[in-house]
Image: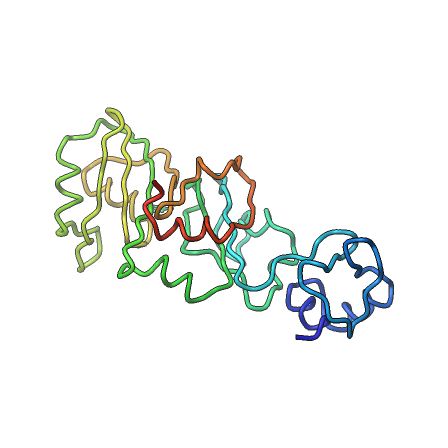
Length: 237
Ligand code: URA
């Protein structure tokens, strides 16, 4: 692919903008030597304004989503995209969130521009567990694990029961829940079905990829390596 198109597709500007950037000498190799639009150079050897070019398509980003941000590209409230460089919103192919977390849920949020990968993570058939730690308003009753594992739990207003989910008790008002579906407000509604309420919810893992292993504080993000992406589909050890 021609350099102008490659760089424009990464959201740095229109092809006309990127052509101007070449003319202005803003696109260089790692030693600062100016590159020209018809040069043939590996992706890793391209710098823009002295910074390495963003990763090519196939990008997967992990973010530690803070509470108060919405997983949407258009919403009057603060958006998870506001935490990324603005050009990431103009990439082609588009960078989407892998499923959604509620505005009031924090934790591990993935983004990718790889539609097949996204589907493999969110499809209930793929059975990649999404793990949440919930703090509850009331003490657990004691039968939640059995209820969630039964495969018969109906959420309010729905007609298809949830597939079995795993609950581990972490304390009288604390639980870890692993679900493979991604229904609207699912974990909050599962506890609502038991007469309880979630007062804080954090996603701690997607498959074998654990937030705690990524070294990200709330609001931070980074691109994942191939090994880290593979962990989504493994047990995480
Ligand atoms: N379940 C919820 O209730 N909220 C989320 O953000 C994710 C799962």
